[in-house]
Image 1 (cartoon, rainbow, N blue to C red):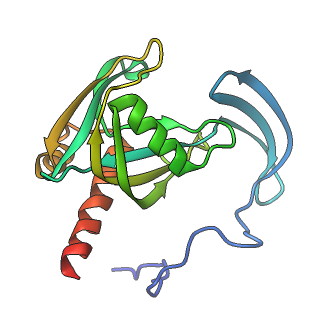
Image 2 (cartoon, rainbow, N blue to C red; image 1 turned 45 degrees about the vertical axis):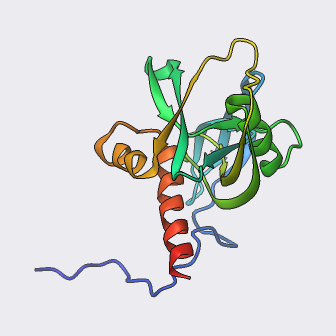
Length: 202
């Protein structure tokens, strides 16, 4: 049997991004193909490692915030939303796009009130994710919201969604068995589970 040719990295493994990266692709020209309210689709001429010319198409996104609203009864809020690209509804944590120049936490606080009518006294940053790295610049920062106060939704005109409460254990089971397939929701609930375990161990 041949030996594995790949290096074993020692812990802690460093971040993938690095200075003077030999994998760098350099943009020499770009053209905006679509420019709408929240996204741009851009065609780029690039030079790839080795010097060959190539093209890249990417969706530029201004970023978003996601919120795991955790109640005192160990339930979380889930939304059921229609997602037209896949022609069906999905279970998701509340989330929303950043307004230009808006901080992630400000967006999270605003969107939780707008979509669910909920404000929170305690906020914890759980992490950030890039959910479609092959074609999109989208970045989602996820927060845990606690000490909740219930109010009225303030949905945007034309925004339609259903909000429910689900036990955290059930939400995690939904991620495992395929009832939840939305990536930000799966990642957020994984982070929340680890966060709560760390809190309990202290």
